[in-house]
Image 1: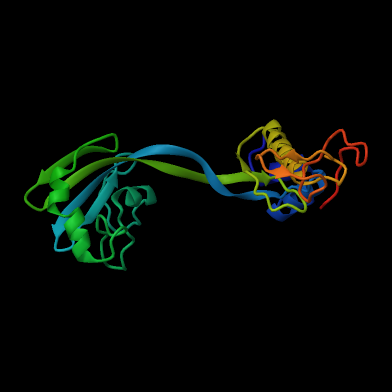
Image 2: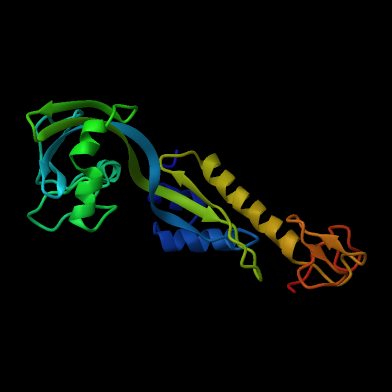
Length: 244
């Protein structure tokens, strides 16, 4: 089992347990010279439920406090609002000493915020899979029980394909820790396949397709045209092609 960057470096035979050293080892160990490394990435997702206290003001509904239903039970206004919660409320990060306002991430003008996310908005707000409960406490205060999806970040190995002479973008494959050695090998192998596929689609020689052909995207090429795909059975370049 590979649990961290040290285990990964040992598995790959990298000189040091650093992202740069791992990148160098993968580059040398792949036919295409695939870029790779270790970085922070989304390694999972979990649903969190929060109770949010809102109060009506001249600029709309201010988010006074919030508390998670998991873990600690006290309300908080001093800690940063979780990104997933702020995103759901469309609440922009306010200046120091101020509280966020619902809708402030959409509208800069306080009048527009009040018109679109004011009293009428709150009165007509209906519960759904995310808004589990709405409780009015007096004419100005509302408590919202909100369930949102929260991303879990952690260290992950990443690798992607590369094809010299082509600007084709390739998918980046992430393998979060902990993982099996096989998972690392599969990601590298897939990146190699992507590299080879791009090479085959964008490189060739002037005798690969004497009758003309189309690439995998349906683009038609004339015989010997730059960019024509490789013919794996070509007797001239033996399917290896050349950088055109």
